[in-house]
Image (cartoon, rainbow, N blue to C red; front, top):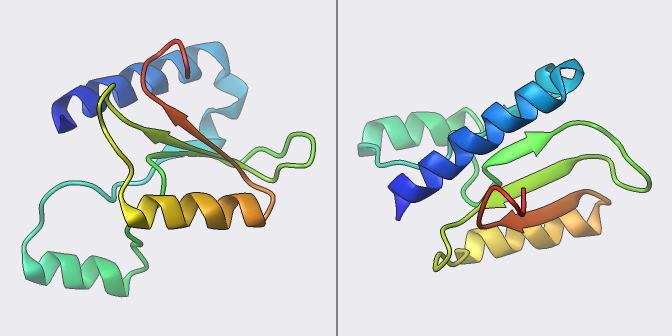
Length: 106
């Protein structure tokens, strides 16, 4: 599953950077995924990495939203409890959160 989501993320980033180059510096990935050894995971946690944070973030206010958080999933992928909690926190603090399963939804 992860490989499909990786490909989707690369496609989304490429599309965004070509369509909206003026906002490229405000659009970034959050490297929360992947397998890590215990020492590396501990170090990253101390540095502020949070489980469940969306894959992509756009720091651009629109309407009543302060930012856009994008979670990418394969067609059959499901959100973890941490991802659902992050989604809820985003919505409660006026940040837009979307779940995209393909480039068309993005």
